[in-house]
Image (cartoon, rainbow over all chains, first blue to last red; front, side):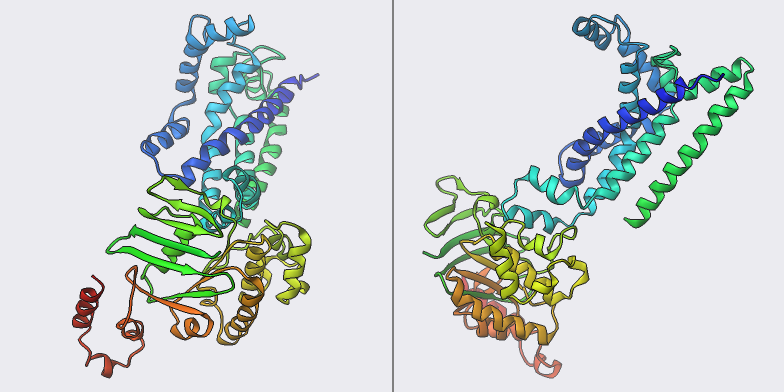
Length: 218
Length: 242
């Protein structure tokens, strides 16, 4: 009987990452779309770094950062009394960093397209910048936000290198579908690899299709 | 009490330096060629731009006093602003747009009826005509029961017939509202028709006797245009307003 827990873990990781990145992505995309400030290009390049870095490089740095003797690992140990590395939380943290550009870019594009006069009209009509964001900007950027969410979800489903570095392959904790497939192939369990892969392909395809539709309607 | 302002604001190429006043129930028309700084003046009144120096008071409230460091943000000024282009919120129906910042929904509904677009209340802005959108924008601005109304070329994107109808209605509305209305246009006839007072603005300053020539410059026939030494006229104007 094939173990389906890795699929459940992949879906859980993708959902948690997407939920968190919707908030962080919007918070970062908004000033990048609306403001001019010193160091904006530096910020954008930094956010987009995971797009060009090999996942193993990013994973390696995160591994160094989350280790029991490193800053983040020690702080985590002091706060929660347990190690950070090779836990589901470490996977979530790594996924957030790895998928950040996939959330920020579509949202930034959507926010940039908003007619500035709509925002000014909202201000004149008495809305604070925060209320303007929720009542005017967000409802008119839903396509970009949805596209960002779908891309993050899919990208997280397909993660491998970063996850292997910071999560290892702890069954029921960090052994997600992509790692389970790799291990199945290594152990010559091709049937397991086939089933897991076959389940991932239509899921990814349908989500990507929805994403394209959303982009096109935008 | 109406609105009174003295504004200084540097723009690229010239500096806006203007004093204006408008009493409740009156309409002041700022008229001038494109790029004269008219919209910037409205934006300063609305709080969307900060003047380099000056003061603005409205209904007994001080909105701006640069000397005393007073600056009231646009959200707190409670004024109505009808923009040059359509700025209704596209995700809302006409009724929701009108009630967006209304004191109560009933006021917004009454305005929709008053401006004859009640039957369009459930439509989205992109499904109605330009004239209807501008009526809805006026409803949205007035539903807040503003202290003053600012109109930035509200009819410029409309066809002649719609423009004429809306002008008539605005003129009728003006007496009912009893708030100061400041209206910006490049159309001298529109300014003369609607304005209780007309303030010609050229390069950010109140212009006087050369105003009509400047305004007509683009409309003169080429034969006539050739006979006027515009550079000399402009020099005379600069000397006069210096």
